[in-house]
Amino acid sequence: MLTTLMRAFALFAALAFPISTLAQAPAIPAPTCTKPAVPAPGTKLDKKGSDALNAGATAYQTCVQAYLTERRSAAKQHEAIAKANTDASNALAAEFNGFATALEAFSVPHNAKAK
Image (cartoon, rainbow, N blue to C red; front, side, top):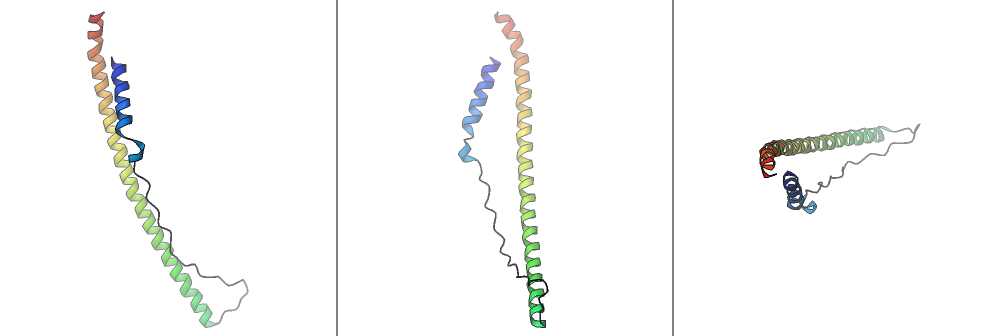
């Protein structure tokens, strides 16, 4: 009896949660940072060229840092959601295991009487 109940539960669980309803991973936005061109080694830069390279490098660094911060923040949020889902599913599994154990304990004496 218990085996039949477990098979029925497994079938119900499989049918209740079709794969097509699972959340799709969100699209990760591409970085929009503009990497400045680095002059070839030994190239001499005048003040205007040096200032432009420094400004470009600073802007690139700022953009990269902002992108990394944003992506890491999003990852932390998804990790928290994943943990919450894992905890909830583990709690339900533990509850069901307790139910199955109690059901088995109930069924053993009844099955013995039926024989």
